[in-house]
Amino acid sequence: MERLFNLDFQLLFDAAVLALSVFVMFLFLSYFLFVPVRNVLKEREDQIKNDRKTAEQSKEEALKLKADYEAKIKNIEKEAQEILVKARQKALKKEEKILNEANKEAVRIRERAKIQIELERRKEADEKKKEMISIASLIAKKVMESSVTPEFQDQLVEKTLQEIGEQTWIS
Image (cartoon, rainbow, N blue to C red):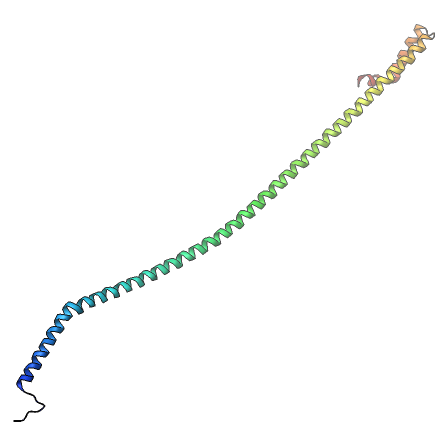
């Protein structure tokens, strides 16, 4: 009997044993090689997913922090402007206060000067009165010495006192 494609029992048996050994080897390799490799790949995939999630969370946090910092920077600029405005207002108030005090001091100095001038005028008037009195007494003395009788002297003194008046002697 001629064989078709040279198929005999030995060949079929060898093929079956070969298939069975390849299957066993596949199971053995898959258990010792493929499973650990799959586990490593699975762990690597999980780690990459976690890294992506962490990166996205970090990016979101960074964006939030950036927005917060930008808001703070804007607030700082506003606060700086407010501080400058307040400082300018304080400076203007202080300037106004200094000018008011200077004006008040100038008024006080003028008042003191007016008082001083008035005192000088009075002093000068008093000195003139004293000088006039001394001249009048010298003239009177000379007139008296030159033959004035005591009755005439009394009349002259009374008349002079009446002419000068009591107000002159009081002031």
